[in-house]
Amino acid sequence: MSCSEKYIAFMHDYLDEDITEKKEQELREHLQTCAACKQHFDELKKTIAFVQSTSHVKAPVDFTANVIANLPKEKRKVEISR
Ligand SMILES: [Zn+2]
Image (cartoon, rainbow, N blue to C red; front, side):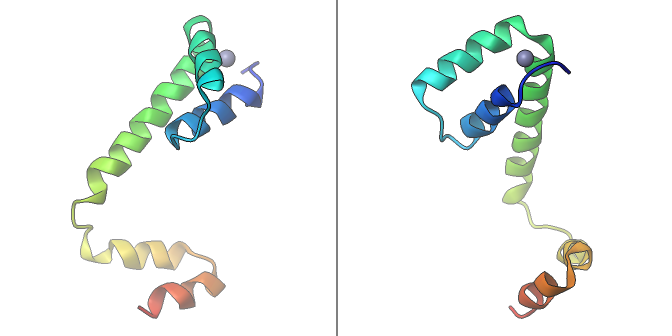
């Protein structure tokens, strides 16, 4: 992948809805000419769509436990105390 991290950063800004019109324009133009970035962007969007589609669905009972188990110890305490 030869692209600068600049466009990757733009993509994250875009998906966070925290991008200026000027940057968005530049990103769109770049995506039309760069297959690597286009693919990266598509995958980011897919991931976001997946997260959004599951966020209002009840997670499996052991989901949170699994997440907590994967957290570093100091964070684990905070998460458990709810
Ligand atoms: Zn690119």
